[in-house]
Length: 400
Image (cartoon, rainbow, N blue to C red; front, side):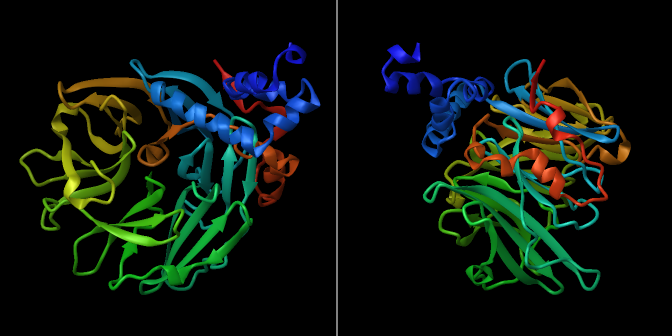
């Protein structure tokens, strides 16, 4: 049929096909392989996929079952429905990998939940493509204090994916390194960090990637906590104040950053009231501190179980959290309705952190980079004492 259709119509049709179908199309003819693996096609397909995701968003849910990590995609609708399983080909020397974040179909994961291994991977699970990042310049050793946090995102101006690593050694001595997919190397950009005060980003702190910038909660001696941001395009650091009402004198249990409807959200757990409370602040306009608005508030007792950790605010406004029974729940703060999502992990010690929820878009990103970026190559490059799965013997996206 392609012989009788104008090329622009063929391209328009192919751009609207799902990733799994396009992978099969690359084997139809050489011209289609060259087209589908071209950076221009991958970019245009991603734009259409992102537009479709606004209507039918996907959530990536990672949990630990027995000795393995399980990755699944769910439709963020009512009800929450699993649409596919993602086979995870890598094996951690720790209990499981830490997920830095998801961006345009790529996941950034690193293996240092307990032991620092300097293993950082960019992975597109739907096309079985990944890359093991080179070892950072600053390596952890057993002497002195050490903490690190990562940010991952996309530079829309340069069309490049970047990983930023903020390391703190001993007494607030920061080293900032930036990895660019285009160069395949780490660069020391410590001089880009220009703050008049010292600060600490909690070790392994989760990022919130909003408006082209990664954001973390930072603490500062003798001062209020604030948000440190790193703009992926300008490669400049900045800061955002927390809402004025959030006082350090309140008994805050935890502060976390999330993304709610593509906006920056601050999630607080507090013991300041008669009943422990949980609230979500949303920044209506990114970077405008006056636009903080308290969006959701509730008391823990409505859950009827011990509340451990909020994970995500869904597009419908429901909050997803993991409770002490190891289950994932969704609850509506307007009517106190609680739903067991039927997603559970195993092992008490894994309840709080083995669960990870993030937005996800299926894409072809990394497809143009050839065989060297396959999962099997990444597995071969990992530490030899790890148990490695046969990446070529399993599929990447397995629909139910």
